[in-house]
Image (cartoon, rainbow, N blue to C red; front, side):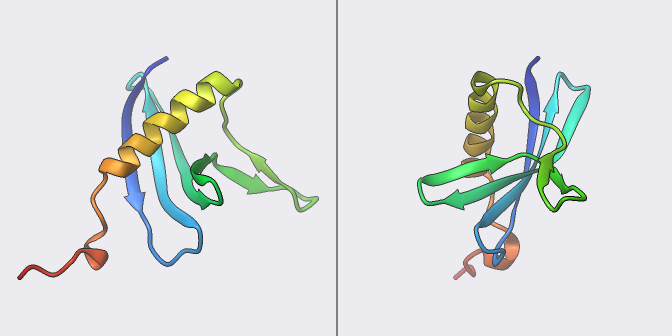
Amino acid sequence: MKITDIRVRKVTKQGKMRAVVSVTFDDEFVVHDIKVIEGEKGLFIAMPSKKSSDGEYRDIAHPINSDMRGVLQSAILEAYDKAAVPEDDAAPEA
């Protein structure tokens, strides 16, 4: 399974959340709402989740092993670094 597209939407003024990402695999399957979060040790990804009846958040989709999580996180953070700043935050042109 290969990552064939990553779409990054940077966000501002949302606490520690820096972006919301959609990742496409093999041009056939997409996972939306992966979050890029600023943590104490730097950026990391949080998989899409929903709140269960007991108040816990549970991932809707997630990598099965740490190797795949590492591949996914590296690809997402690389795309995040290359993504444009939202127009609202862009510096005015001189």
